[in-house]
Image (cartoon, rainbow, N blue to C red; front, side, top):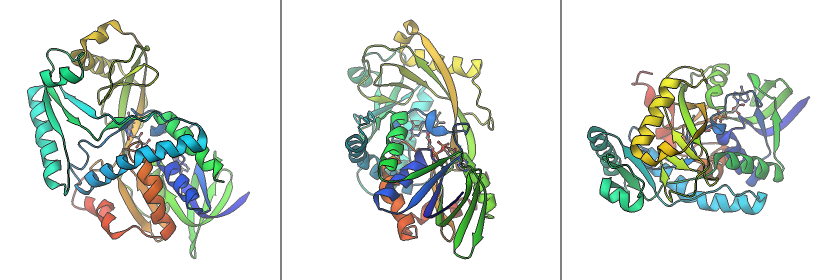
Length: 368
Ligand SMILES: Cc1cc2nc3c(=O)[nH]c(=O)nc-3n(C[C@H](O)[C@H](O)[C@H](O)COP(=O)(O)OP(=O)(O)OC[C@H]3O[C@@H](n4cnc5c(N)ncnc54)[C@H](O)[C@@H]3O)c2cc1C
């Protein structure tokens, strides 16, 4: 089989499908190539936060990008609902990040103050002590030092988001080649010839949106792409009545009533296991934050691999003419802006100058 298309989007996770959906909306002919169900996918194992606070500490330009991204989320959620009938469960009632120790609380305050000081525009956050949190979240544990609150934050159902973007993409005439893992990319003249298990794809432009697979795709084009896996383990409880009306980074209630408890940050390569010591530590933190959890049963745990660049911020770069690298840690939070704006760069054939800070030149002086 041979397919010719304008744009080949490599990767059908949240990042690839967001860009492909945006391209389809712009009526740019494109095909999504995905490895299929056996692939390692962050998009199926994440926490579902639509989040701004903390973003931009290492890369100041990321703060404004994340703010714009969450502002665009309600319109995306509504569009997906009307086009596909899928409610992606977006709520944006603010978000809380809890600190376990006074040192962690002080560090958080310092970090967010640094983010705010470098941001040109309004950037509100509040450092709340236990009493202030209790007014908003009465279940908070008595020994919790405090936490940071941001009105920009929220949450969504990431699996429904992935499903809705795929369905919306297909409804707009998009094509997904599942089981179409790319094993070779050859540049012939101004075309890219991609070899996949399902045949050849010839494209004018390619989008590298394959998560951790981007490192291998980069090699095919002679470019090093510094992304590595960082494991996160998550616990999930039985369903309980509605408790939290805001998103909390450590314990998030889904619209089904389950509580997601997370998460770890582990540099263990591609190991997708769960471990007793880490899940016990996560559960211990959660009990400290919310003592009522001692009466709630854990029903499941899982792990997933984050896609992390050296500063954990996104990388956007045209790595060779016509080949666009799009990778990030926060594919849920950035879904709307990837659909709305990143797709436009691919359509227009260039990344705007104001996004130059997101390319890999920023890592030249850093060690990974
Ligand atoms: C524990 C955890 C919690 C998280 N929490 C949040 C959160 O609260 N909020 C948030 O915004 N983000 C969160 N994230 C991050 C978010 O899940 C990711 O940013 C997002 O899923 C990345 O999507 P992706 O499409 O880049 O990668 P993936 O979902 O990994 O998808 C990559 C796709 O590329 C395909 N692929 C790989 N190689 C090839 C190849 N050679 N050819 C063809 N296809 C290929 C695979 O089949 C796969 O489908 C979390 C991640 C983890 C692990």
